[in-house]
Amino acid sequence: MDNNVNENRWGVLYCPKGGKRKVAAMWQKVQCALDERGVQYDFVQSENTESVERLMRMLINNGYRTIVIVGGDSALNDAVNCLMEAGEEVRSRIVLGVIPNGLMNDFARFWKIREGEVGRAVDWLVRRRARKIDLGCIRYTDAGGAKCRRYFLNCVNIGLTADMMDLRRRTHRLLGSRTLSFVVSSVLMLFHRLEYFVHLRMNGVEVRRKVMTVCIGNAYGYGQTPNAVPYNGLLDVSVVYHPEVAQLVAGVWLLLTGRFLNHRSVHPYRTREVEVAAAKHAKVGVDGRMMPTPTGPYTVGVVQEVVNFIIPD
Image 1 (cartoon, rainbow, N blue to C red):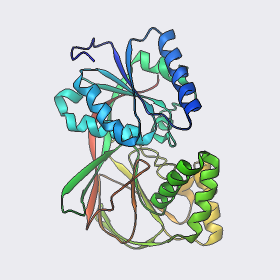
Image 2 (cartoon, rainbow, N blue to C red):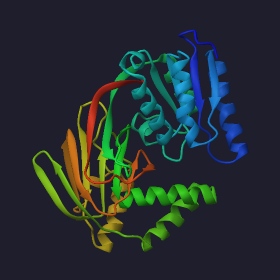
Image 3 (cartoon, rainbow, N blue to C red):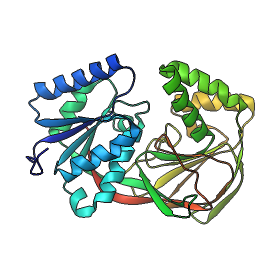
């Protein structure tokens, strides 16, 4: 790639999923949509999740002003973390876009960018209507004692939901089918821990008790923070206490129908920062991907208006 890339030329990072036929078919759709609209672009394809950050850094370093991720929430997460590493001056020149193609596409769904509607997504990208968006940021200490941070677009999950996402990803890799992996992972969850002791501090309020799950959302949070928006400088937090079985079934229904906050076991908050003083044995997921469980307390905050993102009309 030329280090002096034409600023109108896009860098397209394709993060495939599924079998070889699906990979080829999806890229053909994207390629046709780009070619039909006369877009100039260079294309790179990730071999696995580990290669996304390497390829994103390559696109940034080669001077692309428009970088489009054909992937899901985890791929977008890698992309924004690379942008944050690049520094403000470089980041301010780059506009990020997405064509949803992941196991989870919640951040794209927030903007009404639907998976499968490739032509429509490309039309929006061509119009290049960009706005600065917020990122959440989790700051923690790893097992080696190093101070770390990870940015996120959608949410941080602590507890049961993180467990479920981890199981779903592992069963999806094994079984291939989204529906089958969801069913199998749901059954396996019956044998998992359903309660975790947490100690949270936010807005002068302390929560010290056993909970099922905590979702800290910059956007939808997979339905658990449905009122969160990535442009108000605030995070929405849903703390879910352990309901009875009948309430649990009702909670799933409310989650699927977009009324999750109506459930009596869900306690919502809105804040700039959450201090997680303790979360014993609770796994942590960031934008649908598991992260190393932090050692000791950690904080989750928000960084305002730091990434240029292409949104629909």
